[in-house]
Length: 64
Image (tube, rainbow, N blue to C red; front, side, top):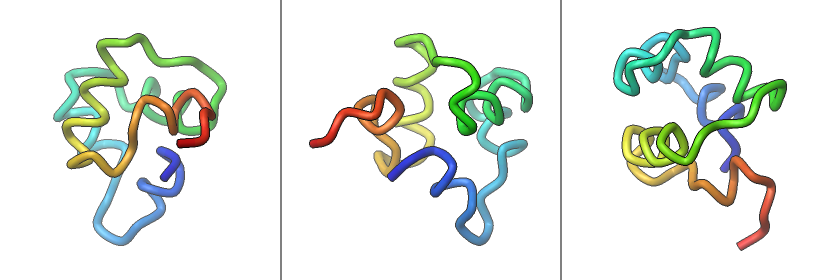
């Protein structure tokens, strides 16, 4: 699942995810729009705080 798809789900917000990951909301939205790449550390945090729904491979566009 892409980060955009995750954030489009009911109850999921970029604001909440940004707070959990300790980054700015704009960082999450830029990563979701693929305007900005995510560092390895941020990918790991997103994976953790989405309960594994969004994987690093999803953020890199690599099919499983």
